[in-house]
Image 1 (spheres, rainbow, N blue to C red):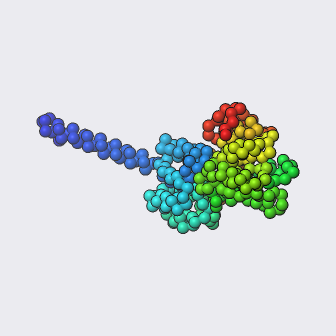
Image 2: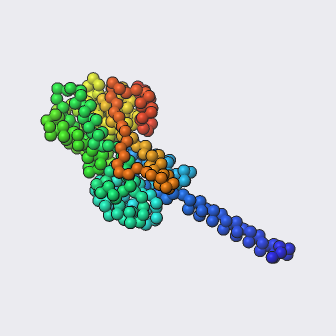
Image 3: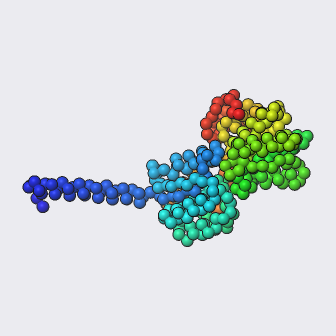
Length: 338
């Protein structure tokens, strides 16, 4: 068709515009098709400083700029997590990443993923299921974290160990693992648990504070706070301060936290707390490497892969460790976060 007449010119312009639109749409479809489809089932960032860093890490690594079409659901409700995972499977994701709110109840979802050809990676938390139901799990060894904390505590050679145990979300892998070593120490007569409470599903500092306040009001004698994350340790110490009970390096009560938030490490450095156990939230890059290996037809890990983690106390803490291993905002040297 010749574009000589006014009508023909109009038709030609419309045709060119249509072809351009089709071309852009095709390009977008091709671009989207080349992205690796990933569904992530995670806990909410409000849960803790650890989880905030974990969620941010997932968002940064599994971005479109890095070749991923990623959707992430953040909830502490196990049934909502399961529903989200089922939705991702129906949507046709290639990879499903799960950090479960509760360690049980996942068998049907994992089997459905396998049937649909979806590769499942667990991160941060294990699930109580047969290992054949997932490709690999990148996790902190929660039981080893608990053992590290208890071994450190017993190495202090205190005349007695009267402990307030503040658990995280009951039934979670973190709670079960971090409780295990302390419960074994109790059963063997090495420690006494004088109060056993929880910060609830949100690992709440406020709930942790209430646990300690209740113990104080009941006249419980204790010299150890064993709080299963830094936020709950912070809440527990607030109760101690309000009651005028000394703590930290030169105080009556030893304070142990978990997760390596920089504010917690600065508290250890200042002698305000005594010990903090690392639990690294930075798992996304390693899992991304596994996914890239699979897409390239190469081998990737199977089974449980544990991250290597450490502890820091008032004798070993350094600025280098805080800056290099800590997570979230650094309040600065000498700054105590109460």
